[in-house]
Length: 259
Image (cartoon, rainbow, N blue to C red; front, side, top):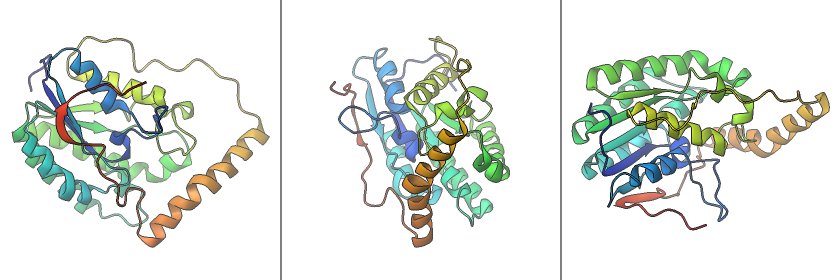
């Protein structure tokens, strides 16, 4: 992999993490780490082009079927691929199939770009992570192996205590806050060998512990607004991304969002 390069094009592939939930802009759209990274890369390369094919809720099979060939055909300098975590959170998950599909995606993308970036996704501290940790760590071990085989870079977000801090996660407990996305963008930036702006691993300052009543109220609100609908979609085979288009389906010159 060529380090510290001037990238003139970037394609992001994945699910809600790469789409940018829950980093919401004033107009209601999502920004996220990939948009933040694109903005910084555009400052280094006139005519910089960017596409983001990610759609929330997508499983690795859907990413392979709907995004990978499209991304490969764009022949961008830089491609990021993050997928498979939604599969690990399903009650029934064939990890052998997930590993095989992820390798298929990497094998298709790696020859078409200068730099392919994979990730070990962050995990929020709490009982959900503990329940699914074995699957997640199996997935991330496979990510490391694929990177070694195909010459990709790996951004290790999973090992960051700062990104595991509950304050880095939105009220849905599945998606990073704006500060979390900013740190992910910085982590990718540094993995590309570019000059650090700050320490993305730095812990948040100590906060006052939440009172018991406030914690219970937050738990009830989470269950009603987020957990219940999530379980309903799992039981009916639906996804939050059904029918939604990619946020930036074409590799076009980057333009910052309007304030």
